[in-house]
Image 1 (tube, rainbow, N blue to C red):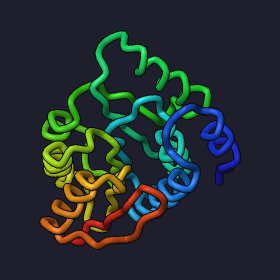
Image 2: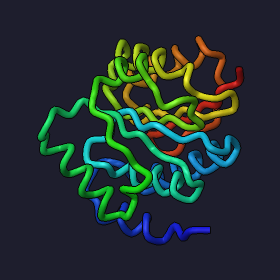
Image 3: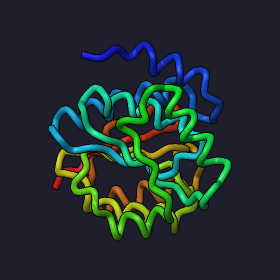
Image 4: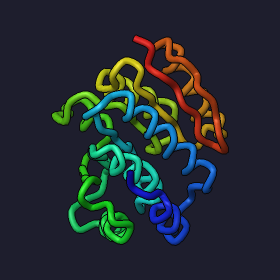
Length: 185
């Protein structure tokens, strides 16, 4: 089994807005979801500089699957270059793929097959959360996990609760500002 020491070090050295406890929660959730669905990877919806991608990507690396990082970067976007550099420095380029496009559109046209884990850290407005979740929920295997960042924001929390109730998802818990739900059916 691969060590988690390196990803933790790179996580701490990478600038970004995610707290360490959220990253450890994400890493554990991804390990649980992916190990329960062999061969199924993960998607991160909203990547910015790749800080959370390091935590999730390390779990994917351990399980020998890939992580698709979806964000609306434009060609030659400085933010995308920073994310690519940070992921490479963490030694995860072999299992983390950058996908440029609008989160909802990519979800509606996803060609990567079923997923075990999805992390949403895209637009936090309720309509975006609803559209993003609706376009990706069908790609999660039953028993898979979807986590959301910044649930402390009222509009984000309202959107997440609305969609997870709609899908009758099982609430798994919250650490810091990250909440997680399991797909039941």
